[in-house]
Amino acid sequence: MCIHYCGIRRFVKKKTKKTPRSPLQQRFLNQLRACWPALKGSLALVYKPCVRPHCATCARGEKHPNHLLAFTHKGRRRCLYVPKAMVPILKRALQNGRRIERLLYEMGPTLLQEYRRENPAQTGPALKFSRAKSRSKS
Image 1 (tube, rainbow, N blue to C red):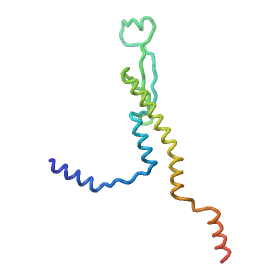
Image 2 (cartoon, rainbow, N blue to C red):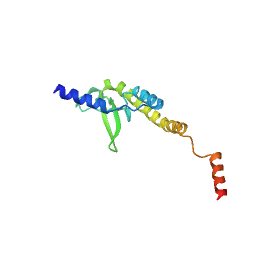
Image 3 (cartoon, rainbow, N blue to C red):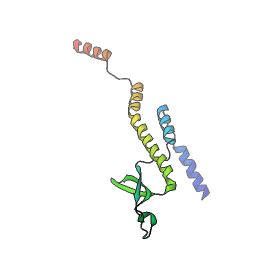
Image 4 (cartoon, rainbow, N blue to C red):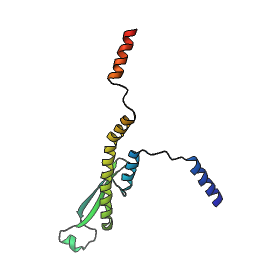
């Protein structure tokens, strides 16, 4: 079994070649790595009565604090109760999710600038002038 696994592993390593990453791509991946855990949604503190029949807190008219995580799944809004111990982790994940969204929004113009730097436009005064000369000759 080990020989078969090692043979496949060597074969896969030989066949897959890493494509060189541009500095922009490497910077984006480094920024992305720093954003773990990440989550899209919202966290809300809500107050609800409990289900216990003789709860002193509910009898006083107060309600119990709970955190709800709201998110979208398959186009529908969903909510889940969150344990208190997990609230700080989810807050950080939500911040990281917003950070990733900002990175993605910034990436569009940056990619376009990099493309234009590597592929200068094929238009401009020199090209227009040479077209005008070629038309007058015929």
